[in-house]
Image: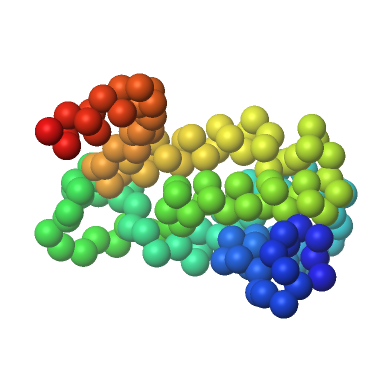
Length: 158
């Protein structure tokens, strides 16, 4: 039994744990298929970036190129030949799961290639370009201070 699963031995792993294991196995297969094949401790952030580019071919999110007439249009009226890509949110979640899996498989957290600056920069660039391309914004939701939230909740009850 995997020591990362904190539930009882008779229950199945959570959806997150199952996804994390599947993502880790997929990334491992990608490394083994690399020319030359790579193993767990011998990959770098550049391999993580290559993996994310490889995954684009399986994407389901239409990302308009800058010369497309629907660039920046949230709901285009007709189809266009722009490519499908992995959505930023999917890549961000994937990197988070792989980052956790790397640590769980004995990787040095300070040297985790999934948390490298170039990976974070790439994700930020993907997010920004996809937001422009699709005419949507990815504004980070700020948490309200607990006191302010309680006051607003009390006002709603009145």
